[in-house]
Image (cartoon, rainbow, N blue to C red; front, top):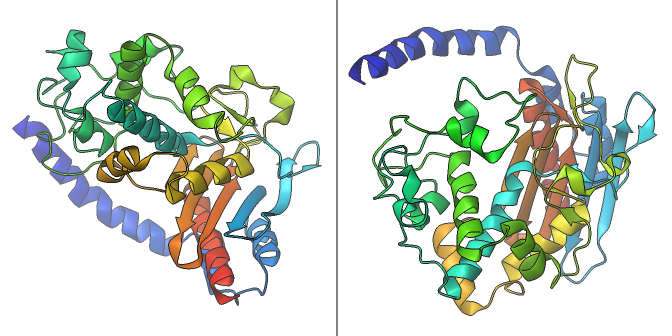
Length: 343
């Protein structure tokens, strides 16, 4: 263990300066130029500018309290067939789905089906001895990313273009690994936490959490364009996803939840304004998780946030990924919010 930590420190000493030098020599110019450009007068101009700086397609949903929702698109849904981006395209929302899982958990805790103090060992006893500190890691700590459980997407066997075929194959990547840190010692984002929360919810309900989310969250909000899997949708309705420098379209890979920008926006508004959760559930949610999120899977980047100062929900979908486009995507989003604040 000590040897591994020493090797990690040495690698950091070697590679962090290399990363800095690489950034200086090969900076993400598209993102930098997008940031330096004069601020446009409209959201649509900013969305168009994002495409000019290397993004294949963009969908933006804006909902300001008391005003009709607005949609802004630019670029391609499918660049090979020259199909324009459409506001109704389905998009892989990646880690934004954690907001739905956290909301479902808050409802189950409110109903006393779960407790935030329940341990991983209590609900998944087969993981005792296979996941370190399973008897100390609580549902609260997993929700808050304070468990110390390693992130499975950092595992050497994990491949974004060839994800695990089933739950067991994914679970096998997480077993018998040393903890990253002692439970509650610090915060470190780990997708493993929410995978395991999903398994706990499935077990206590006796049926899929996806059905619970549909019954208790989606249907009450009238959301008919949110799905748990690629298997539930017509692939023609899904926005294509690209990696810079590759011709391949990655939309055929199943990475979990999909939704339209409008559906995500309606959900996020309800999560923030108290119309989704009752007072007790809202207090539980507020104690464990945040109210906005970013998402990233191969071919897809997304941002979903509520901006309280202007009472506005802004959802942004971008179907282009790479180290460089992450900066461009964030710059475009932040400038859109700045434009909205100036109005």
